[in-house]
Image (cartoon, rainbow, N blue to C red; front, side, top):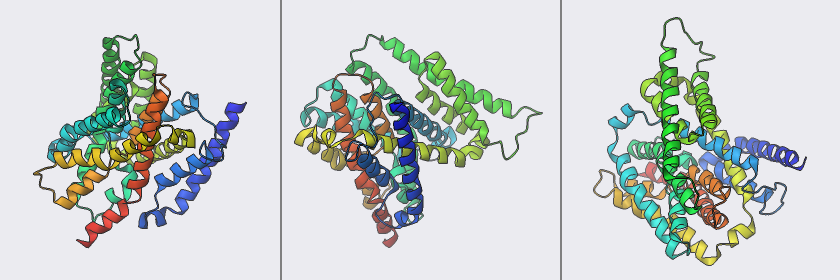
Length: 391
């Protein structure tokens, strides 16, 4: 009874905050206010941070379901932005960010975790993987503004569309290593490989079926084609113990590559569903926080989080984009907007519920870095966009 009451409270609170977010969305677009910051602050105040109306723990079933569904949806829609044809057309700058910038970010964060926060190497590498991805959804005012140079928006969009999927296998493997699990590495690789196979096979079969003569979808039902593919991948992966997240990402890439018409019909619906799940996950993530959680890492943890914010991603991307055609202002903008990835929010929740040793410490450090990042980046996107407009 208590569990159902808590979920009801979460639903009521989330609905109220969502309505407020809708009402102030126009103001937020013009000022330093941000939707992500609103849900972060509301979740913290209503959860363990102050009022304790929402009482959740990392191993709560509701938390796990929200985290998994949100990440699944994000990776599925991200994959749709990463079709092979799109990547071939403009790969050079995003490739630098992914192939050089992301591993550098991972390495710097891991070093900071080891020598500033004092974690051992397995957990330092794990937190490096958790915080390596970036996702400009929290900087929508920057990405969606025409005054921001197209190549900057394209670079961030392509990078965010791929880095979650690239970081995921590393996170999975490092959770296993940090937890000293008995699962053989080949078992983990089999789960990863099976997830990719399921995503590819289901999506390709769906694309081919839609092109058979005699089948014709109405405009009303056409967006449900890709939604059905996602649901099939989710359920098949759950039944076969395949990795559902890599299945989702692979299915999205397959649809974008072989069935662009399915991608176009689903794009609006998919983005709306994903946005709602993202906001719910941020809200739940913030509700898991408390003053004790934020204080637990000590001053070393705060120094770690601040250095992750101002050093890890900026330094890595500035190095990766050296001698690129981007201007200094463009490089600084790209370097600044990270590592506030939405995937980092979900990965931190997954680590908390994984049962690995020091899970609460890894979560606290990750949560501190992500919370500071959401607040800092979501409140500066409009200012950066205006700076480009004045140039």
